[in-house]
Structures are given as C-alpha cells and as structure tokens.
Image (tube, one colour):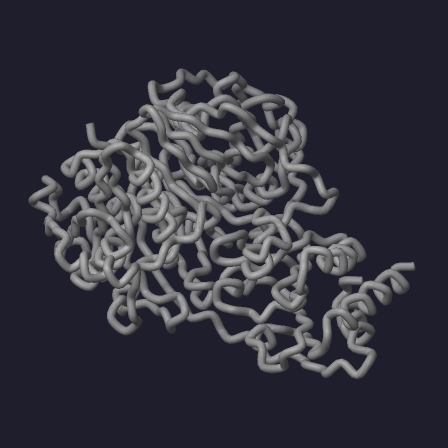
Length: 261
Length: 320
C-alpha cells in the first residue's frame, strides 16, 4: 500500500521585506510579497526523500491561506510534490494557531495520511507549535524537531537535537513529524519540475468541506487577542570608531564605562 | 489569591534559571504553584520555595525520560485539574512550547508563546511579545480558558521571595498517547563550562568574518574573559565552524542578554531576529557599511583579528 505523506506549508510575508500589522492587528499580507516559508522547504525536501526511498508513495502539500497562498503550493509542486490542497475561506481571516491546527487536522484526515511532515516553525508567527497541536488533534505520535529522519517498515526514526542532549526517537506510523533547517538543503525546482507543476492537481476546499463552523476560526474564534502592536523605536545611533590600532582598547573602555568589566 | 502554575525546567533536581524568572512573573499574577517532574523532582523544592513557590507538586516516573513530551502534558493537565489556576506559565524552550500547546488544546485554552514580559490585567494576564525580527512589540492576552503562556529566558529578574514551598505528590495517570514516541537513546551534550546561550547575561558571537573553525578560539577567549556564552551566525554554522546549538538568529536561538558582542557578523535580518532585543550591543566588523552598525551602542570598524585579541587582553588586564 502506498505511503501517503501530507506536508503542511505556509505562505508568509517575505522576512526581508518591511513586515507590519494591518489595522485589525492581523499580519498585513497585502503590502509585502509572500512566498513559501523557507523553513517549510525543508519539510518538502524530507517528504520527497522519504517518498523516493519508499516502494510507492504520494506526497500531498497542504496549505491554509488566502488566494495568493497557491504560490506556496506551486513552489512545492515544482520541487516534486504530487498534488496539492488549498483550504481557503473568507472566514479564516485572523485565525490563530489553535484554529489553524483544527483546519489542518480536518484537512489531513479528509485527505488520508500515514505521515504528516511540517517545518519547525513559520518564519512569520514563528510559534513552532502547530506540529505538536496536529499530533494532539490527530491522536498520533509526535516526532518533532528532527535534524535527521527516516521511514522504514511503518516506523519513523529521527534525531532530535536539544539543548541538553541529542535524542534518537522512534514511533509507529501514522505520525506527525517536524524537521529543522539542519535536516538537509532543500532542492531547487528544475525547469522540468516547474513545467510539470502546472499540470498537477490543486484541490480547493472551504470550511464547509471540512465540517468546520465559521465561529470556530477567524478573528472571532481566536483564543488569543492581540490588543496592541507598536513598532519598536529604532535603536539610538551609537558611537562608531575606526580601528587605528587602539580599537580593542577603546571598546574595552566603553564596556568598562557600562560596568561590564 | 489565585494560584499560577509554573512548569519547572530542571536537570536532575537543579532548577534552571528561566524557571526562577517565571516565578518572579507568576507572583505578579498570583501565588506560584510549581510543577516538577521526573528524576530529582522533589530536590527542586528548596530553590523554588526560596523564589516564591507556595507549593511544589512533584511526580517521578520513567515515562518522562523514556517518551517524548506527552507524559509531561499528562502531568501538567493533572496539575491544572488539581489546582484550577489563573494561568499556566512554561519556559519557552522548544519542548516547553510543545508541552504548553498540547496542554492549551486539551483544556480548551489559548496559548501565547515567547512572551518577554507579563503583567496582570483586568481581563487576565497581558503578555508582551517581540515579533517580526523584533521590529514590533505586541501586547496580547488569552480570551478563552486558562491562559497558557510560554516565557523567554531573561524576561525578568530572579528575585528571592521566600514562601512555604510545601511539597505535594501529584497524581498522574498517563494517556494512551504518552508512550507514542520512544526516546531510544540520549547523548548528553558535552559541557563547555560556559553559561547556557539563552540564559547568559553576556553573549559573544562570531560570524562569516571569523573565517574558519580554528579562529573561533579568538571568540571563545573573548567570551571566557567576560564569563560569556558563545554564539555564531548562520553563515558560520552553515560553514561548519561552530555547532548549530550555538546559532543565534531566526532558525537558531533567540537571545536577549545584557550585552551582545558581534564579531565579523554583518547583521542580516536572519541574525537580527535573534539578538535585536539585547540591552547593549557592540560590534567589530571590517565593513563600515555592515547593517549590524545600525544596531550598536558602540562599534569598531576594523579587522577582528586585531581588535578582538586586543579587547580580550585589555579585559584581562582590567580584571587583574
């Protein structure tokens, strides 16, 4: 039987752009170019490698987001994923992590899965909690923050590098995996891949397809409220000196004046 | 007064500093009740009492070390049921955030991660977060259920505030999911003798300009002269010069020390995301146009191979 891999990806505002908040304190997604979250490319890459090493596998990329989020799916398809699912609904605007995990979990169940692979965090919200939330919702093992991952005989294994120790983990499929940026460079889409991606199927689902009520998601359904967002004042200009042979001593003098020495 | 659950991060009974900072913040909201799990759990009580814990709920079982995350979620959920707290605070480590998220889902609550400050509010605790590579600061609160909030290291001062710290055994029954992910082996990280990166008061980092693995000895020598932790930019880590566990930036650690010293680091957005909230920033870089100089309180435009050793020597001399 075919190994069904679902990769969750997010379309995010470009981190090198000038990111800011919209009037309703949600992330402004209109004024900054979006793209596939860089950390999700690692998830797509590991999914493709696992699929290549399996007898028979199918990689589906899944995203929740506005119309433009299709760009993220297209990028993943051009890297080599087989098909895509786009969950889009006006009522999703302002959905928080808890709500997003609900939508993703319902979509994953509807799609059918043996293995879910996510990135370690998004590059915008950067909470890093969605993989754990998916495992909790789906009731399957959480095998997260892996720097190395492999799947064989219905078992997923991987290495999780923590602050205090490096751990080898093991769980039975179905499972939810997340991978770090140490898991291996993501491939660039080839010209052939880009052309092929145009013909790959992209399903569009809305909330009614997933039996989710509008009140469960969006700004109204959110479990958290952002009350204020203020731009951090620019740091006041510091002293810059050119090293004329005494630069180290001058820096030491500054550190002493600030009581660090 | 309402009770506030504080999840204790400890190593065999030695409480890590971020947990003590959480106790300071918890006392702004209510009476801290600590939850310590695993080997040495009961040994944490004295330190926790000294810093304000009125109660310490403890439980030890092999599951905490042998399986990933879920046993700890089961225990924290049991503590939540036993105490009905006004909030649950968890240190913002990778594991802490995962535990907090699963707990929030189970108890029907919202979650806020990576808070850098916390204050009591009319409608529950208000958390300050630093977002978009620290270019914005937001204030948020949880609108449903018991607020579950993870707090970054160095967000508050550790304060002595002696309290009873009565040890009580927590009763925990593990869920079916608890044994889903087995930890088949664990290799402890070798101790460098330096402070933990995210907890350190001073961080000394090296980047592309360091030029090679062997040259990181210069950065380490400077760090040791200041009693600092060593960090590295993504460029230095990707080049294989320094371990990923020391990476500062968006995909590495986010640090907020009293002093951040950047050597040979240009200051790309990916790096700034992880250090921009440091109180004082100084930098050494050859390139006067490097964006890092936009952030510094004091910058030296020069060759780090000249400036850094001279700085290290001068610090040693001054410290006698």
